[in-house]
Image (cartoon, rainbow, N blue to C red; front, side, top):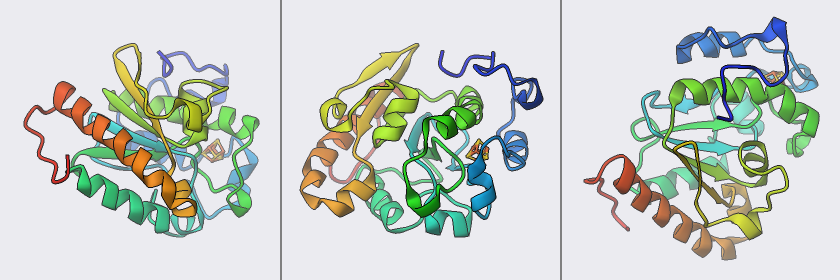
Length: 212
Ligand code: SF4
């Protein structure tokens, strides 16, 4: 599994394998300084949602609003994500857990480097090991590349399920991309309709969604 018990990086000073509680993991990750991003932001944005949710959404990294408030997806892109989730019958503190591939804001919202992604990966792996999701929605290329395919391209790979070790991955556009290019919203909605169908298949056959 991607989030195996063994850290991929052999960093004995950053062993998270003994932590099996999400709150304890959050306390630990908030002390992380494994890459340079931490020195340029206000704090670690760990993630939020229902810790027992079996549907996880993974984005890229915190933006300005997320860094200021210490919460994921709370700016304009987050508001759009909440609308999409509502159309799917999902609420962020009930049905899902939302996190990012890197936990600290990259300066100017640039894409996290390979080194920063690698440094934060044990934190992400530990989160997913504890959450044990059945479905992971990959919001944008960084999430796709970190969790599924280092060479992944969202325009090519979106909308198609990939199953690994019992976890179903759906790559789709990051909500920020939908704000930049509203023409992509139709495809993104098709992807989320598939997520609702998979949620009914794997998690809750009686799930009610207003628009699908
Ligand atoms: S981005 Fe991740 S690895 Fe880098 S300091 Fe923040 S929590 Fe640690």
